[in-house]
Length: 407
Image 1 (cartoon, helix red, strand yellow):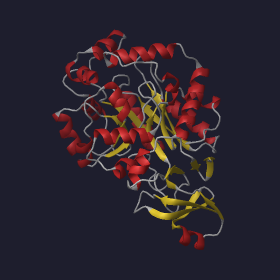
Image 2 (cartoon, one colour):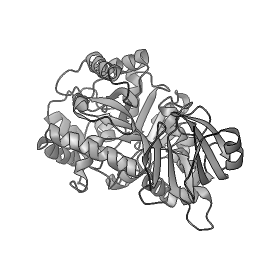
Image 3 (cartoon, one colour):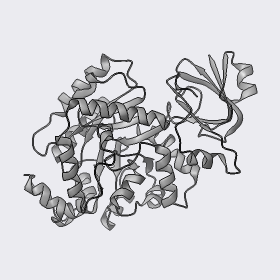
Image 4 (cartoon, helix red, strand yellow):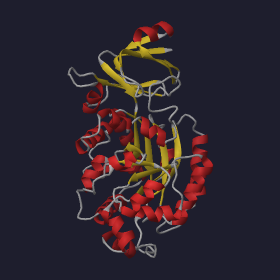
């Protein structure tokens, strides 16, 4: 048993606890509360972290670790199609060793900024055997595309299932990520949804990200339409529908789906969202700013009951893998939102999206011992503002009961 004491413990459920402590038994939290109470009822070694705020590890709900090496390589383009061309040109010059190094670098950077859990969209799941055991809790969602050749998602999942069966020490798991309606067919989406439901694994996709995607599906025109038509995509499914309506007409979205972006919506889409099933949504504030997408309808989606999470996207459209930087960007863009609500979008909310509400995202008895500490700066600001304003490398972290960073 370990007892970890901090100036303030933020459980993300209930009020912050001054002179707080967390008792950790193995890889689980045994108790959280006032230091005197926890230490009296749970014997064990005391680790006093001092003047810090202790909170649950952060959860990145949308990340592409493959592209960590592309930081600063691609300036903003004239169109989203041009950006796709630019990233494809960079990818063509990279080999397996480059991607392995990029994934490792992304995991290290995520750890430094306090992320303990990642939903990673993995374009090359066959590279997993070349990776050392990741230090973080990671769900590897195989990104599948069938625009040029067919993909058997059953084979993809079978390979991932066998890998994780033989590597039980890897934290997290695997899932599926049909890339987007413009690169994945209705059949691929249907197959992926079926496998996700049968296997109980996460499923995520990009949807309604750009104005050009909307042009393509609704108007059968625009740079994305011309680009994809030029590389041989069958464009018969374009015209008189939006990306959201395309997807909802081809399969039933439900609480299992984690939808990234959802920036471009019209009045018909809002009718579908009002009366349809509620899925999870991931907003990537700094990537959104990079592309200058249409304003994200956070308040309206929240009122409708959608669970909103934050992600970093990839470093091909961002400057770092810091989730607290995403929180700050969100608060700049949405001044009506409280810092506490924003921090729920990197703790409680993504835990729900991963169907891990009973084990991640809070400091509570029985939950995974995934914890981070940030300095408790001397100021009159309230504790959630202090957390959101912290910009450095976290001085201490615990994942699955093991300390990874110590000051």
